[in-house]
Amino acid sequence: MIIARSAQELEDALKTRPGSRGFVPTMGALHIGHRTLIDAARRENECVVVSIFVNPTQFLPGEDLSKYPRREEADFKICELSGVDILFYPDVSAMYTADEIRITAPDVRGFILEGASRPGHFDGVLTVVMKLLNLVHPTRAYFGKKDAQQLALITQMVHNFFMDVEIVPMDTVRENDGLALSSRNVYLSSEERQEALKLSAALKHATKMVMQGNVKSFTIQSAMEEILAPLDVEYVAIVNRAFQSLNEVVIGDTIVLVAARVGTTRLIDNVWM
Ligand code: AMP
Image 1 (spheres, protein in one colour):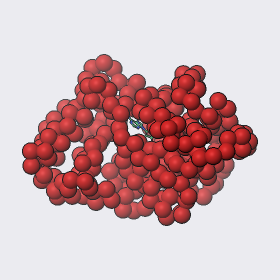
Image 2 (cartoon, protein in one colour):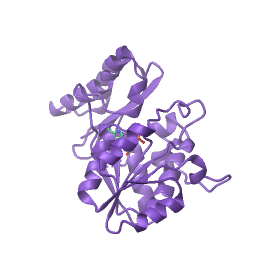
Image 3 (cartoon, helix red, strand yellow):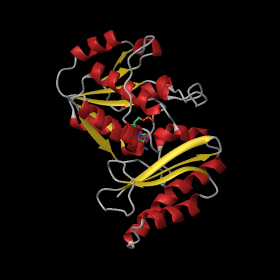
Image 4 (cartoon, protein in one colour):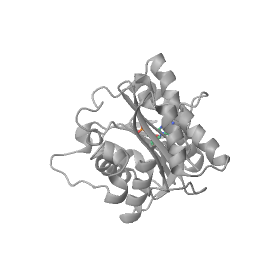
């Protein structure tokens, strides 16, 4: 595995690996969710590139940028054992200069839900993903459905800017008890981890209601809020794939999303129906 720390080192490394290229951008502290994306990239491409970069522009003031988990040694091992060809591991100065042009998230999908809770977050995400895609030139890039709004915005950016890359959505990987894997789960105490299960429990309940024919969003949301009640809930939303609010679940075109704080840790989860 080649470790590239700058754009130039990455370009040199890419020259040694011709053929189709699968790319998995991450912020590190790799877990089985990331592994699933890397494994798909490995199966579907001749060359696999992973990036690890904790992108400062997507964190708001007061968020967990400085304490975001960093696991350099373990992450390198995981990449190596997963058959990654090139690991791009830049520092901030390799990615940003002062006073740059930035990508701005569109009104419709960028300023609701996550965008409302974290204003400016998606501008930072889109800007860094644009940079990374331009640096790596992947055939396919893999993103998790767990970050559903991020996935929708990246898909839109690629379309709007006529970028020649296939965005591959990947299902959310969960612990056996339902908790969606997240690098931020390490912040949870064992009691908080139990509390955090309420997110997946609420989504499971929503799925059950829909399977029983209860498709009214209001009823589903109320039932979910009851399950989530002990937590500091930021939003429960039922939207279509374009992130427009739905009065009723439409099978094949619905995402049910939740964001809540467990202690000081902010968690998101969702289910696609
Ligand atoms: P992150 O390192 O949190 O920025 O995540 C990097 C990529 O992994 C993003 O596309 C995420 O959506 C995806 N991802 C994170 N957690 C999971 C999970 N539990 N299952 C599947 N994909 C995930």
